[in-house]
Image (cartoon, rainbow, N blue to C red; front, side):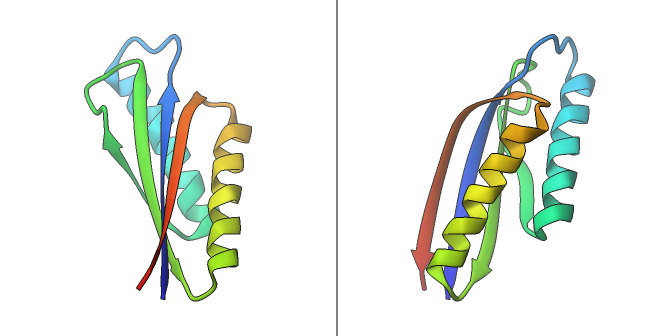
Length: 95
């Protein structure tokens, strides 16, 4: 079994309230869940107006497929244009 996990840190501009931030984060999370059928959640920086971080995880049996899907998630988030992607990281764990 192969587990892939990833983190994406966003920089948000012109966001003046946590409500506006949550709207953007929720849009990103929902789109990723619907498109890739992965587990996604906001993981850190919950009280910051300017920054957000989401984490996601997926499970499979082929390292290449997991790696490819993680790359597609990163590209999809960047293509959404809802926020600037400041940093990404990923890890693949063999169990």
